[in-house]
Length: 172
Image (cartoon, rainbow, N blue to C red; front, side, top):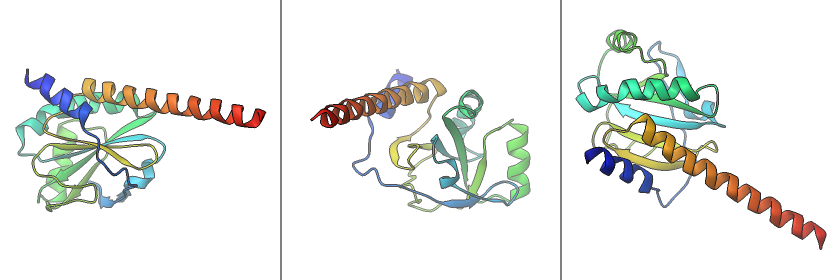
């Protein structure tokens, strides 16, 4: 039942504002990475910590999702949301076979994407760089896939509607 509630909450949430967002944070090697580098793809931004059991439970699903979609239209971007040294974090990421990019930041009440009131917290960013969804609590790859399929379908329908409208306008 808990899975269903989390799944439904994830699908139902859409912020009132779909503003373009960006940030730059260091990865586990100290290289600066910006959210805007991933424009053109859906970005699953997952705030997590090494001490957080639900965060650790999500990792295999997030790795599987990232591997399945990274060469298509979506990526996972993990943000370690705790004060740990870079070497510890790098070893942790390697030992948990986290193949997606992992960035590091100290906890703050409100991030560039919005509030992180508990861990894990996941935001979904559209290919245009707009924050479109937020989930507090665990997510699954299946829930993310279902949400993105719905959004992809809406996008295709809006594009085909726009194309039909333009065609009718051109005839006049």
